[in-house]
Image (cartoon, rainbow, N blue to C red):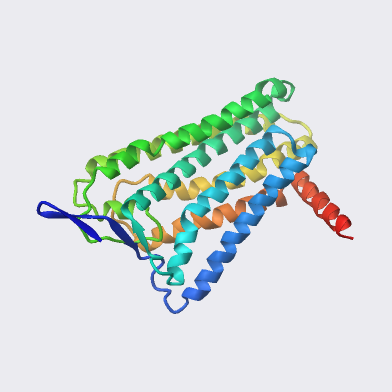
Length: 317
């Protein structure tokens, strides 16, 4: 749909192509992505409930982990339901309004930036716990945890304000077909009739600032942790210190690896199909893997899940 102003039209609705080349297997892909989405919701909700109900997990590390789980639920819910509707041909499933498209892009960017900052805060928490254990209670108090978490959400919320404002000032006069399964910045810019130079530059600088700021905190935190490990004499101490941050380091590697590839670029034109594969990985696969990584690599989480399941079974009998 297009509205007419003067001699050019303004697009008021976009059509998302989605994942191309899978028409014959669309039900298979629908089932696969629906299963992954539901699995993500169940996993992250389980972690939130277990941390809230088990007093042994009432610590700063797990406080931040519940925030990460909330983020993962919201992050996937911004894009996946719309993609699933497109797979099964629901009426209007592939269509999205102009305002809806900008809203989806805003929330996707907001939640992605918030996750970057939250992962940085979690790295700082591990640094203090391993390198300054005697001062941990003072440096990472509950008041500090709440302020750090609030700062992550606030700065994450502010991150897309300027990019989305600039996007809203651009003209889209057709075509209105987005070659992606959600409203990402790059395919949207490819449809604009306006000069995209300023918008590309701002996107690049904002993305770079978020990634560099958060990754610098993570690198410094783990640099100090490695330095501490090298000066530990006991192998048991080495293993105990490493085991407390192995899950977080794995999650960071997965998340940042794909984000650095996707967003620190200035060119609109690139391999669209390959970008879709990478987008699926960080928007669907990574949020599904994160709870598994934290639960499988963490004895406390596994123990809490085991106790919760045993209690439920016992009550059921």
